[in-house]
Length: 190
Image (tube, rainbow, N blue to C red; front, side, top):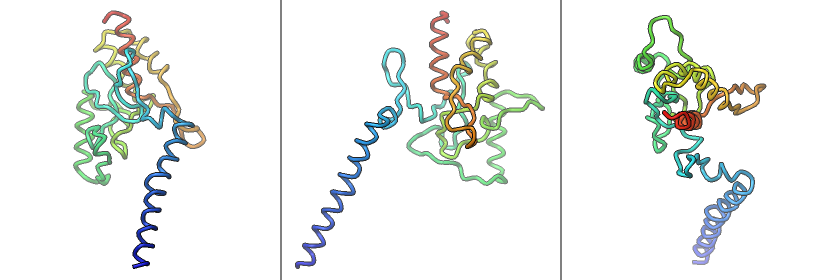
């Protein structure tokens, strides 16, 4: 009987330490050091409404918006993950062809790889600068905005997520870029 009580006490202490104290300590530490990330990296519109997270892709599909990378999970954050298809799987080739057709490209036009290949999580919110520049003519035409305005927004939205020595390259957060695009379009009276 004494062994059972000792075991129960050990379980109770372990639960309190591992399930209450440790997570609370990590949350407090994160709130002090990086509160924006600890609270979900929420992006707000000009009127203060939450429109998404800077860490999760959204499925923009209208021609007047920049599109994110393809997602094997349909940009559903509750089902993150890749397709796990091998490079030789015909379904992967079919999906790439469908994506290329969605862009309405003719033979010989090169498309940036990140606009055809899904990310590992299926929720990558960033595209390369090259991918954003590639989409700029479509967005410019759909919004009736000057091409200079759209390319300026792309350049102003540039972020570098890691140091170049570690392979970091400039990228664009699609949600933030599309919000900036909406703001410019509204100010120009679209």
